[in-house]
Image (cartoon, rainbow, N blue to C red; front, side, top):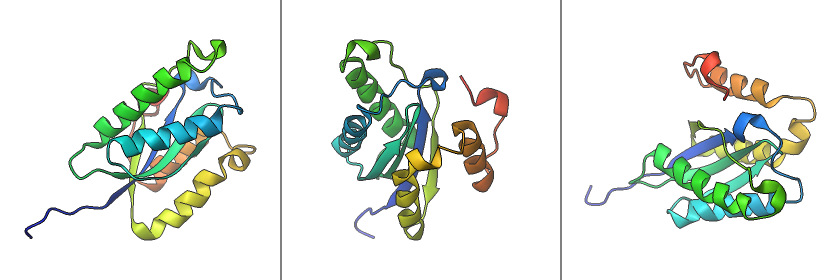
Length: 150
């Protein structure tokens, strides 16, 4: 091929430091919009961003020339600084050190968009910890549970 082409879809998820409820419901829509814009600023298409008071999910594309770790580091760094500037209650805001980035096919995208859009309802009956463990099991990601939580 004379041209380099790629469409890599990711489900990215990360939590606030120690999973503390640091994202007030009143700020969630603006944070989600900011995260989508942070994705777009590096050439990633953000399909949907959602979450709760202690974590976010992002359905996005991975730019052809970027590593997943660089994408996530960029959006976490920018959004952490943005959160700290929102109000006095957010000055201690921080994301956890790690993240999850899971690949998906185009046919799986509608299901993921629905899942992300229903995070508030989903977490009325399910803990973030259980959600992550289920994703890791489903995607057969080898891990050590003692290193998942900071």
